[in-house]
Image (cartoon, rainbow, N blue to C red; front, side):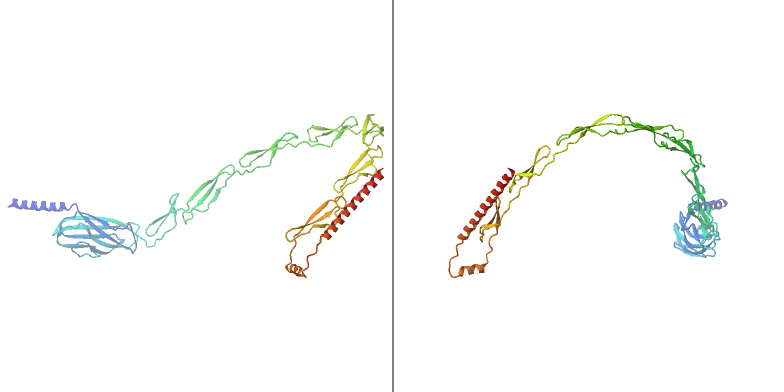
Length: 471
């Protein structure tokens, strides 16, 4: 009997161990847990289960840190949550039948209660039962920090070369921002010898961070006065040097040659009519012996009153001889020809209307002859006479005759302009025939012939008189 009882107990223990072992794989996890929750704000956290055993009920218990407050809870699976209040934080779930709890089984709401600089723990414990026996457990937890609704930051503190930080005095929250630099100030002036330094300071209150940058050396030297190291002469350049008082750099400059400074010209040899003279001037600069010379042109000969040895004529030059009173040299000069002395010119060939005439003059010294042209007189036309009457369709002609040579000059007469009324009246009349004007035209021609003959006679008389005068 004892053996049978012992065997039964062993079987019960084995079965109990087997059931518990089968629940060993159940796991729980939390979702929706924020890393930070501000005071008086809420967050909904969900409990998820996987690998849960078969059960008839389950117990869920929520444990929160002092900075958090449990607001409410809600069961997500079939069954009834009972005995779960925000005061005790746990409840018993009754199922209508055996089952599992995998999936989202429970959610609860937490509220930030007290600001804390340390993280607050959120823990959930799950106990699975079959009847009154525990068939499995699962546990999970996360932390959340309760922060200020409005931080109370102090001054910034330098964190590194790039950023500065400030901390909330209530919750310890840290804010990080990049440095903001001012325009900087020169903390080490630059010079021609050394580079300078410019320092920038962060403008954030309390940070005090600084950074520096190098200012390149300047080329603006502080030179002293020039000092002559080699004097310039009249023909050679000199040099002068000056030194920078900061970096001792030397600078050399060329002094241009001064050039000669001459005094006045002095005559060392007077000029004559046979030899050039000479003048000299010397450089007045100290130490210079340079001098310049220049020639003085010969003076002109001083001739006595010249004697004419050959008289000039109208066309040939003469000669005169003089003697210099200084050197005795004789000089022969040319005497210019006198040129002709013409008397009054006489017309030898009369000019005509179209051809020039000739006039002749005689030199009173050598009887040389000279002729000059006499300008042609040009035509002398009389009054123009109509030689062809114009008609209504043809132009007429009027002719003028030169009174000297008889040359004819014609001009055109425009065609007649007919007046209709006058034409009609002249034709109506008394029936008489138009008068014949042939006799009038003949008389006009006669008068022209008489004028031409008279002009020719006048010209002949003038020619005869001129020939008699020359003879």
